[in-house]
Image (cartoon, rainbow, N blue to C red; front, side, top):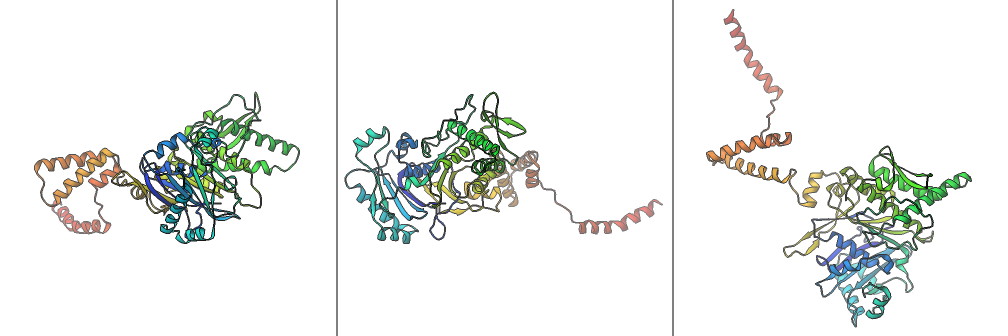
Length: 482
């Protein structure tokens, strides 16, 4: 289930420092989804890359070290720490630094102690520091490391707590995805293609989806299920994953979706949706991106070597989860993920109020910039379930107007003139301008007309009263005519 309870760091991207609480009230990891929201440049994607850096272990992970170099430029010190909880292992901390000069482990441990003393999980930090040993984990010799990994940067790791022989990275499936069109039609599919390891290229984000392996895996599941049915054997081993895949797509798009395979002229995967049989290149971009990461992640879960007696631990990073999606899909994507992958801890970035307000139980981490352009994060808050999209726009994104920018400017001018009119300070030119704005805004929409030139409703009682007063006069007029 959820495994990351806290992330602390400094000297990365727009952050001089940050401290994210991913825990519940008891200090245990919250499954999320955890959604990072904020204007461009506040470091939403940077936080996902930092989490990926904490799990990076091999060049085959696909972690983008060139991008990481840009994120850490200009800082004397880059370091981060996560607090994790693994089934049957318990709680431990992982701290990592780009400083691998002599004495790095002592300096990193001293920083971790300072962080624990200041944070809102101080008691947890005290428990880790007092009852656990510190285990250095990395080869930090710059020359030998760079020769061995062809691109990985030297980094020092310490683990605070846990047994001495804990291979924690091998116990956790972690994968990160960004918007991509990597899933596409292949003229021929080689059923022998598969990933060498469940973490192969899993942290590259833009290039995580392995198109050939995904299609080989999907066709393999479909074929094995068909063979098992023909032999009257149990099909649940193959049907459950395909069913989860189809169920997620049905929830997200609000219509029936089915995975199928063309047999001739060659085996080809198809999605039955929009009343058509579509290959992967025929899918709309938003659908293709979503189908790509979902299938790729499910494939990696199937490859994840885990023991049945241990709870599966998986973490999913989704950068720009709303990219290319219609608002209808934006509203349904996170609830769908939560239902289909209930045992996965999810971290996502989004600019969409439809995503932010869509998922009960989600945690929102709003990022902002200070006067010096440094990013910082607000304390986490629950998703604004039950609030309108307009309220979410204002509270989370700081957008208070519900109209376009031009209309907003006209409405601001109209409001200024109305306030002056109330004090009797309008000039003839301003009176004419107010009338002009009222006519212009009224013609743009019924909503604006109700705002600037509302029709005042007359109550039934007032109408009845006016009618009763008018009846004697009407009778008098009638007599005069006679």
